[in-house]
Length: 143
Image (cartoon, rainbow, N blue to C red):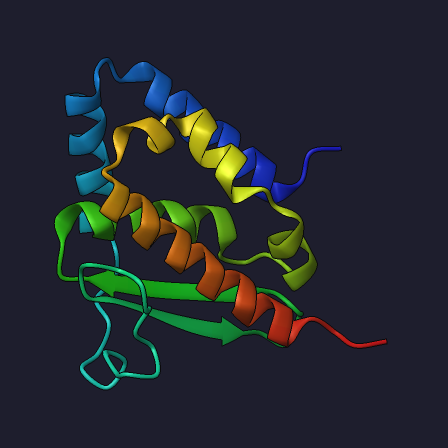
């Protein structure tokens, strides 16, 4: 059975496959970032800042009563906002267990991001994933 997170990845892979070269894909990533809801000034806090990103990046983690974890994010860089949008599509609304079981590096390879991003952006993307995983780990129900 395919998980919701795997289904979201397949949708993204299909969308990227429809686009030709990386110039078109970058435009699409930027477009995805434009659709992010803005964070409030209060949410753009040190506590929500993601370390290890060259740009300013903030992630807000919102656990829900049903066990799902929702994320919201923002950045001062257009491409990075788009990368956040991709991460939110993959991770938001999932359980901590689903988040922790997901192989993000393999997903980024499937999307072609691994080869298309600069080292600095790849490191920032990895930092965002680490933060999401750390928050999911903290919210994982204990036996």
